[in-house]
Length: 394
Image 1 (tube, rainbow, N blue to C red):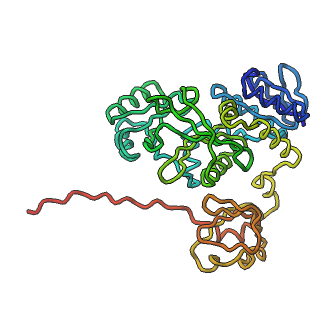
Image 2: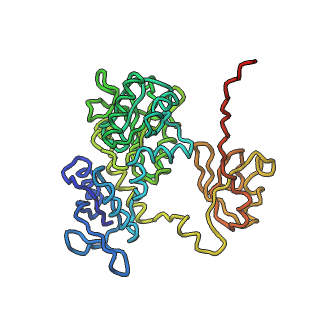
Image 3: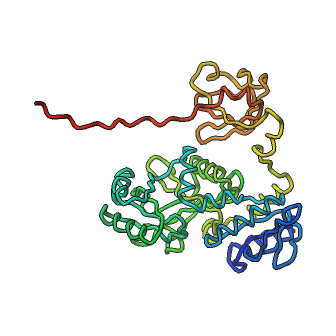
């Protein structure tokens, strides 16, 4: 396999470990500076130039895109995608994960548990937003902060209002987030590769610091994750379109709360804490995908007229609940079930003996006309009744 690691820091620990792991496995690997690429859209086929010369062929890339070059870096990754070069992290996945608000919107739509979060811009909306997330203390986050930078704990409402007003005056966008007191300055970093967690560590804040980032002086220790934490970490990474990701979770009273999905996770802390070859697991995954590439069914299977991909919801209706997939009649209607989603569990290529339950979600390929009546209706927001004060009796 010929692999390119896109990185502006060739001497960084993570870059060196990935390069060494690839060489150890007999692969041809180059570290290429992301900013040295030029995107060529003049020819009949998409192409790239590197340092002024046409780029040679690569089987795969591994993006390590820093936050300061997100726009250009994702444009380069997208061009590699157009050239059918495999990347474990798509350009859309990287840009979505980098924007904290966008990531929260995507994950919340898929029922991933997170700390209560609000986003406002109008000064008059700040105090109500703080109340909606549970009141002070609250955590204030810059949308594109990294390594704990731009994360502030405001102990009182007035302090929070002053901080947010100051940040807004400098054209900064911020999130207002519930402070999870039971986490006690600790969080979990799960390193997801493909469809599994290959390593996990607990990060503990130093002293009175509430941020547990290693760059803020936090300590690390290996941790064996409960299955619930593993499932949430893998599902969060996949929802974001990332096959290599660091998923940060708080240990809430009711289970894992996802804080962030990092598309370029550092390897030094987690490899030293767990003594595991995380870099090797990443390289092995990329090699497997190059040998047996994944297909985006939404792009490749909709070319047949009248056929497409849709997600079907199993309602509480008696015609499906309690029946097996074989008894559902889907195959007879030329509908193939690709994946069954049940809560946080994912069952790929489910067999006909699987019994359907209420609220199961089926990713299907088939005749659109047949599936049209089974597609769930749009969720409508319930109108909130505003109670007017009673008029005094005359």
